[in-house]
Length: 359
Ligand SMILES: Nc1ncnc2c1ncn2[C@@H]1O[C@H](COP(=O)(O)OP(=O)(O)OP(=O)(O)O)[C@@H](O)[C@H]1O
Ligand SMILES: [Mg+2]
Picture (tube, rainbow, N blue to C red):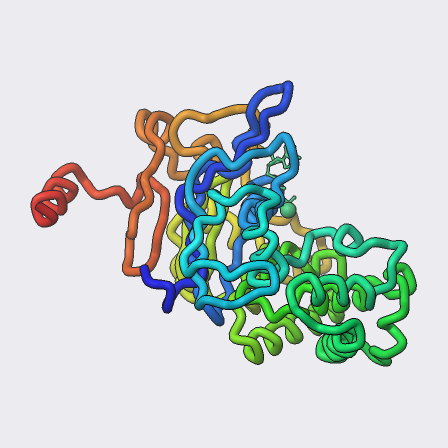
C-alpha cells in the first residue's frame, strides 16, 4: 500500500508482558490500517489489548512490556521538525524508545489522548504551561507565541474564557473541561494521527456528545486520521469510518462501519452487537425488568494460551477438532471485509483452485 492512501499500518504486532506469573500476550498478531482523514474505531472487551496496541504505536509500552515482533509503518509527507527531519517511511518498532526520532514523532506527528485524563496532565502545573511545553518541544516559537497558540487551542476546543483557563491548574476544571484541555494539548502541534483511548468514557452522555462532535469537527478542519478506542459500540457507530474488533490480543474482524453493523461475520462481533441494550431489552411494556444479553463464558486469564481460535470456548458455532486445534488465518471473506474465523475458511477444493489461480 502507498503512503497516499494510508498513514499508518500495523502488521502482525506482538507486545508481551513478561511477569513472574507468566507471559501476558497483550497484543498477539494485530494488523490494522489507518487512513488519512478517516477514523478507525477499535472495539473489544476490557483487557483485549486496545490500550497496549495504542501505547505500542507511541512506543510508550511500560516495563515489563516489550514489542516482540511485527511492524508499525508510519508514512509521512516529509515534515521538518526542530528535532530532526524524518525520512518518508518509518518502522516505529525499529526506533529506540527514547530516541530523537520517536520523540520527533510523538506529540507532533502522532498524538494521544490517554484513557485516564488526569494521567495526561501534571496536577502541579497550569494547563497553559503544559500545552506550551508540547508546542515549544516541536516548534521553534517564542514563549509569547506559544502562549498565544495555547490560548487559541483552548478556544478551538470551545473552552469558555481561554485566556483565564490557560493559567488554571487541571484540578480547577471539571472532568469535561479537563478532557477538552487534554484534546487541545494533543492537537496543539496539528498531528497527522490522533489516538484517542476511551476519551469520553468517564463523562456524562451530554458532555460525551459534545466532545465527540468537537473531535469530528477538528478532524475535518485538520484532515487528521483518528484511531478511536472504545468498548462502546454506540460511540463507534457515531465516530468510525472503519472498525477493527479485537479479542484477546487479536483483530478478529475489520471492515467499514456499515458492514460491521449490517453484516457482522465473526461470532464475537455478532455477540457484541446483540449485547447493546435496547429499551425493549431493559424492561417489558408491563414494567418488568429483563435480563440483558451477555456473551456466555468468561475471558480466560491472560497467562493462558488457548489452542486454536481464542474465542472457541465461548463461540456458539464451535466446530470440534477445528476451532480448538487450528489458529484461524486472516480471511478476506468479502471485498474489504476481513475476518479471522474458520466458518469463512475456503473448502480444501476452493483453496486448491485459488492456489492454482495464483501460480
Ligand atoms: N503494565 C502491565 N503489566 C502487565 N500486564 C499488563 C500491563 N498493562 C496491560 N497488561 C495486560 O495486557 C492486557 C491488555 O491490556 P489493555 O490495557 O491493552 O486492555 P484494554 O483492551 O485497553 O482494556 P480496557 O477496555 O479495560 O481499557 C491485559 O491482560 C492486561 O492485564
Ligand atoms: Mg484500555
